[in-house]
Image 1 (cartoon, rainbow, N blue to C red):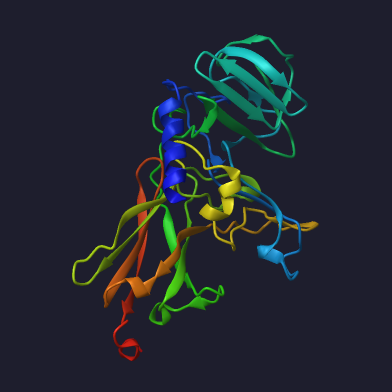
Image 2 (image 1 turned 60 degrees about the vertical axis):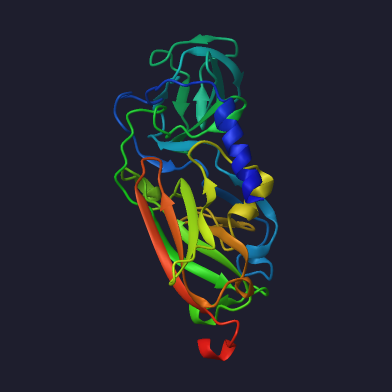
Length: 322
């Protein structure tokens, strides 16, 4: 499945026509603005309350964020980043088809109608809506959304913050958490990781996390074996997995910023991003040794963070690991 996801993302990148850099959809166009939602962030709406029996394991609506959220004050004019023609206009949504692709602007009160020629940086599409206080920008190339923050697209964009792996989580087949010294037999591994916006975000979104763009892992033994070379968990730099694969990328325990559980939205709660690193690692297939499992995270500008946990494998003499 991991290979299949990688192939889908690679195909989307190859199929997408070349794109030139463009400025921001709000003025000043040549100055970076705060981004409070990253491409690939989890979008979660749980059907049941957080304290219900199903809670975090229950049903709901789950998807990957297919654009970026640019903070802007209510009433801020929104402009097209590329010239084109308006194709879909609703009460909060404008789509512009340009020569190279399609751009979607959400949380915008439009002042235009469909099939109107618009000019980048000159034509006002509409105004940022009050409750949202941001513009959601989606860029579609070759029929699939791409990451606007990838180098060579939205500019200027500078990021010196480093993403962080906060915790590595081992679980047994019943879902019970294990300490590294308890790892034996079949286990799953997940990583809790996050990044922070490149610029401080105003208002109630200040301090809330975003996701890293790339997550990978490797497994190396003390004696030099490398049963798992560096392997990509997910790569949001160029495209998105399908929403049906949401729980193959994110582990249960994941929820978005200001999450909704049942009829309650927790407006001050930060998101929690837990990535499925190794859904089925069987230590019985490893040679007896001490192993270091490393998870690395990276943003679209190459800033990196990582975490490592060690555990011993003692298949020949299980008691010697205790």
